[in-house]
Image 1 (spheres, rainbow, N blue to C red):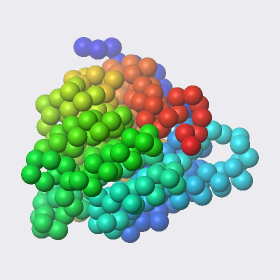
Image 2: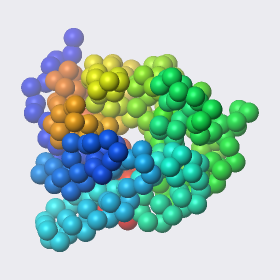
Image 3: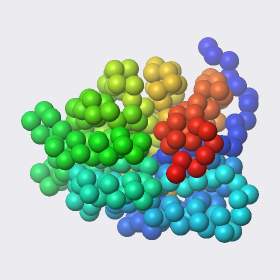
Length: 297
């Protein structure tokens, strides 16, 4: 049995690439500025804010401007924005992606609530969803999106698409030269990617497995992912796992409490602190272009 660490983990320098905040159609625990202040308070390096309703890069810009005005350069925290390719932005819409990336978005998520797999799991009509794969190949518009992601050095997140779709998408994205690919919360019952498939997609395509703090089970109920995350890290190796929260829900602990609990759980259960550092700092810093300590702009 691995020796249990008694080390208290620090959040200084952490990066969370998946947090929800207000404004949102669903009430979140923090608004953008409150989330930014929480990040600054614990010494975080960066947060990527996500919405199912489209884009957040303009909100991130305002957070960073507010940080400059109020805190006067006394910290190195940066808020980053993103775009999610749901029906609200026209689905797989290269024009929306190009605009978002030019305005500073760092992550392009494929459909979430508009994914066919999501609709099927929610017992809704999958025909109303956004196509990402047709006839065993990615839809033509997605090839254009891949080129934009590649040229801007951005990150592709697989969001709520099915495991079968994910393998087709990741293969095509790699062929198109996309460098940064994250398999979005593959443990979530909506996505439902098997452990074997997670290991295979990480191994065969050098994709990052994002593993989140908890998962929405419906009806306001959440299930902790910590035990299964620990198992996955031991199976897959820390090199391919990124620790995020997918936080912001009023039902879960505040973002910084959830992230701190997650990190401490891993260390307390035998994951070396330097491996936790890699999963919460090194991997996301590389994805966001922060290796040299810059703001990734």
